[in-house]
Image 1 (cartoon, one colour):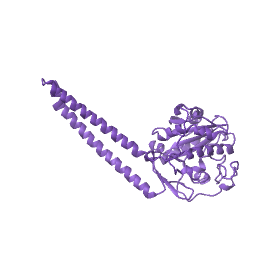
Image 2 (cartoon, helix red, strand yellow):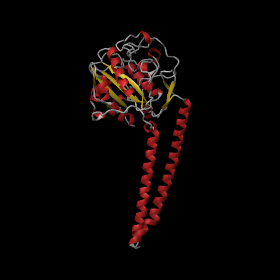
Image 3 (tube, helix red, strand yellow):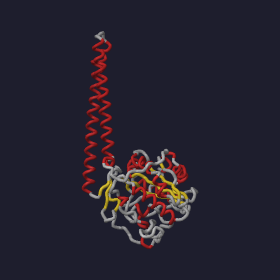
Image 4 (cartoon, helix red, strand yellow):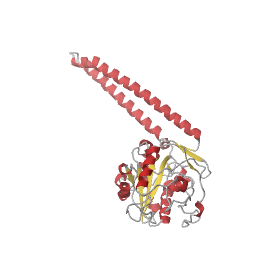
Length: 356
């Protein structure tokens, strides 16, 4: 499905596996066909392996065990053990090779990394990082039906005025998160930038700029145009739904931080996580109803735009049909004028549903 438009106006498409993005619908069809073929072959191999295992068990029960328990010579018994050991080793090798091929085929971008190398970063556990602890109050109190049980990683807190340097310290942790298969989100805290909507947007832009600069894919989407209305966040050819929270949002806003302080939080949710948890249209509607029930109704794509770029940093008031530009202008990073954001993007088919 279309997820973004690059600087030249070309649509990009991503597969729900979260590991493939392209500008060609034909290439996407080839990828899906190849994935279906691999899945079919794995089923055939699994079936053949199961039949082989049953035959092996039958052979062991009818031939090997009688030889071992009979009064045959020690040489025959030893030979039988060698055959059994070789059979077990072949089964283990077959399983390892099949699993390794499956892992490589699901993340093709790891085979052709050409981007800027990630600098040396401090070692820490992303599962218990300071950003995760600071964000926990939001995770526990937000009205998403899955948030409280979600597996969230994070990084070291970024300081106001040092967003670039501090984001670089978290690049290795973000790479681990991108490669993980069972993590539902990655959060970065930016201290002291959430007291105003303008500083919040500028801080988020700084974080995204660094991540785009160090995208392992040399021609990654995030290196093309961050000052636009139609991009969706991709890193290492994988799609991530981007949301942010800040202290500037009041208690009736869906991005309210529940007293977490005058800080900003940037949350990255893998597209594959939505597929893994089977987030259907009915579940999205239930989440929206729960937010509305608690007095914090979610945005409507008809009011703030249909692209992740326009909802990554929600305006303080999104009741009027207007797209607000939260990123700094190209010629002046301190320019936070919203007058350029009145264009409507009705030409795209992608709706951004809020699932945090």
